[in-house]
Image (cartoon, rainbow over all chains, first blue to last red; front, top):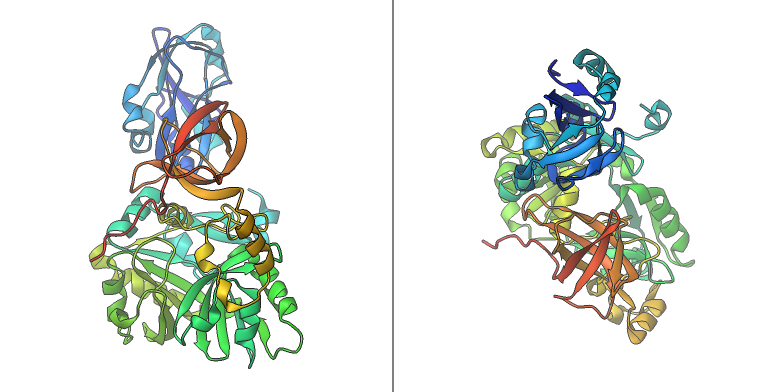
Length: 123
Length: 371
């Protein structure tokens, strides 16, 4: 259910880290709680984000939720496709990244959950 | 998660069916209700294109009967009840002396001296007390809360008639919009009303609670050829919003008058005195200062209930309903704005620390195509 290649937060984001860059999305649990996603509001590239702080919002038909940064760093890329097809988040939550962050404090990763721990959290 | 709270929630006779269908259940107006099954968008589009099935048994029923039942309701509600023939229903308001809403409701005329009021779930006890205490002394009329005697199932959408017709001897084509008939549905005594809260053609079926599952199952089965969807409160809300229908507790309440809600068409000025008439007449003479309007977003943002409205930089109103609607695929909503604004005018809405532009558009946002 929850891929081992990803790390997770208690706020239901995932992050895929490769070469000091982390791509961030929300978990299957989160998309099921939200329902049909209709809008994802993301920061501009160049924005600094802080671990545990909001970096954007995601809206379903029914509700608004904040997105929390799993790590600190600089947003270097935003998934522009989500502007027109936000429903991708529902279809493929673990394959749909929202922002790419260049990690400024790689040690923060130690505080994230692995797949087993996250799976336990949402069980 | 909060067992104390949920144990106090009421359940409809279809509760087990919702769980079996995999619905996500939420508290609503004191009831535990399905918010969605297959997803709000899927359910919404099913109702616009084919058919959806709703459990609305949480709605309340209050019956008013007696020789003076008509006079009592003429006194308590804003619309003209005397225009109702037996078998006909009307949208109306239960008004305070200030012309605001105790509730909005449908009034059904069952007989010359017997009326059925269908009221909002969260207001059942309040409405009953208001009506029972508001019948003028000397009138021969009683109000009885008969909510527990009814389950209410709505089948809505362009295919609603072909889904329901095989299950009933009632000739559905002969029931006009806002009329009703009694007969059998799936072998169960029922009242079938051509009403709904979706902006589509459709029917609402009143049955005794012990037969609710039987009728629900029969409708799901009969709807299979058109791929009917069970639909929850989420889709009910987006459908009614597209159709421009007000939601009590969001768009109207005891602080908003019938005129401010832009519902003058349910104020029967000519019928004589009624609770709130004087206040409404004064407000009409002076002109309302704010008015409920429909808007669509100009900037990319979704406005939600409670967001503030700004006109020329000043706080000037509030959003009462808003979402991205699944069929129109637009961010739309309703808001109270200064009455001087009119269709086409723009204003701003504060969405998370920034101001997003919105434009006033006519209600409803969606009108079903006429055949």
